[in-house]
Image 1 (cartoon, rainbow, N blue to C red):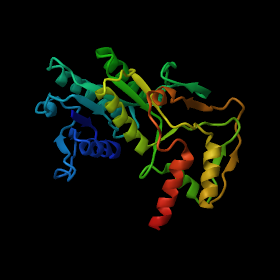
Image 2 (cartoon, rainbow, N blue to C red):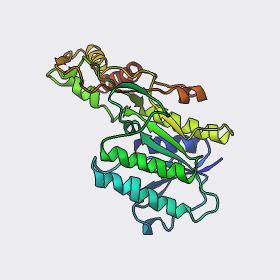
Image 3 (tube, rainbow, N blue to C red):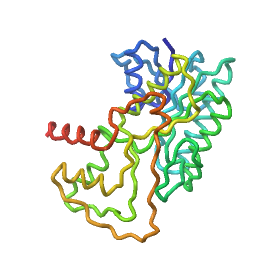
Length: 289
């Protein structure tokens, strides 16, 4: 069994910690404001702000693996710098004290791709994002891989699931949302249960001695047009169908994420398309009501 540090214990990090603890691994969650007591599942917490070198001094160094699953406080340059620059550098400096550096699983984002015309992208596609926040994520990826090519980057697409129900809220609005239909604007998603599943799967591959690539795109099998997704949600929930948003022929179409590298390794998605994932969310919300 391995000793693991999970940096950033939000919903995904906490679920991951619970799964790994149940499998017998020793898990420590690093969090700025951890719960007052240890979870009944046996997860231990270390309280620290990763942007502070002083706060990390007492952090143990004997971890086998590190998961970096952080969320910035805001969608602005300073917030992203605080974790993807200052925070990451602080952690790397801390673990530079040991001869054998832990293996990292770095959660990134498909926002590092700058493609906007419906192109298919995979791990070998150019990453030229225009916005500064995605550029900072890309630089963090590069820094980590430059230190050790055996570290693993996992690029999640749009995460949805319990507590992440943005599209459902739009579909429930009394007025029909205006959606781009032509040209199609593609959406790329992954259910948060599959986020946890992918991270567990990659660790188990590593522990089994299976060679891993340095990067994996983690997105479901169906990068569907937003019009198709919203129309399906409306029909499923018996709400207003989307209205047509008039667009120019050269409007952005976003990209389509190819997950074949991850699937070729053997991962099977619990929610291979938006229909399986959102159907469960809709049914759950109806049961609650």
